[in-house]
Length: 478
Image 1 (cartoon, rainbow, N blue to C red):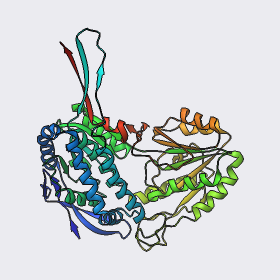
Image 2 (image 1 turned 180 degrees about the horizontal axis):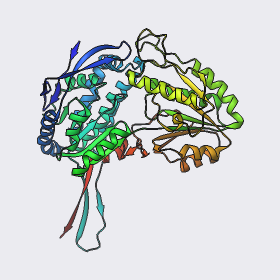
Image 3 (image 1 turned 90 degrees about the horizontal axis):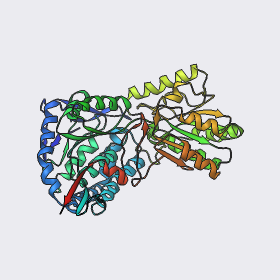
């Protein structure tokens, strides 16, 4: 069994308390590693290291900082198999998807390294003669990054890469469910010559370690990918110091199926989006609105596609479509939501039960629910599992209205060949992203950001880079 240590100020060390927590393989239900259970003292040490290193790190040229990101991309690619194996094991992600995540993470470091010579300030016109007004973009300082368990390695890069590129230093807290791949990465990058304190990894509970990190006056930005409830706690904890927050929270993505769409393509895209990582993705298709005139046809094709979804050992060859849920509590939550939907009148067309045919693991069968209505909990709240509820609508206008009737606003999609409907959906859907005739998955050069309870700020691309920068305007008279 592996035993991990925190990475603080360029050194590996146990938590101050010497306490550890177990990391479980969700498929085998066996303990596979021990990780440090850090607390307030560990937070203070990591933040002090990051704070002490930030001034000299920011003083380096941007192209020099980018060089370290390129080294990180190289070392990830050189250790692809080990990292993918570690990732698949700690979260029961099927191995091909784990490999995609490792590859995307390396690409992400390379992508942001490419911004070194691209991000710019501005020259602003002055009202006064003999005056220049210059707007500089400068690092926000020390960043605290809090990562989720569903894409722990990629989201780590999403926070580390722009932090380091812009001259910030960072303390990153991986999820206690999935710290292993992050700590393996810490081992790898300890040999690339990164200055001490620039990048620190600490693990522990959110109410202890996490709270101490977020409340510190040394922090310029807290960036979280996680639940609405965690986001609310971070906003409250960071309020005392008016610390900037960038939060990607929950989603309840609607899918609109129009009568004129390419039906086979829509079915495939919806199913792929719903079952990726066993439905545990914030931008997954979470609810489907189908125009009445094609409802029966669509449901027939969707029923077959969902029935064909396989599940099982994440390391099997050939790989199944999906594997286990992350833990037992997540499994129970899904089970309770489906039971409540059935009690409210939803019809289970496919699945609707635990995957008890597997010898171990927290499995829930791929599930399709018909006869759903807008007032049901399963339509209104995030499922985070392989369950797809479908609502029949009279027309496109009703689909738009019901899609927007939601507390969340992360992603959405529409399937149509009608340009007017495409443009209306893009203009009228109140979501940070709208996918047209494709599955739900963003690009690293875009901007992944939600509306309403789906978050504040965002990640990726130029606008994601700006989250880590603050402006400084100089008025120069001569």
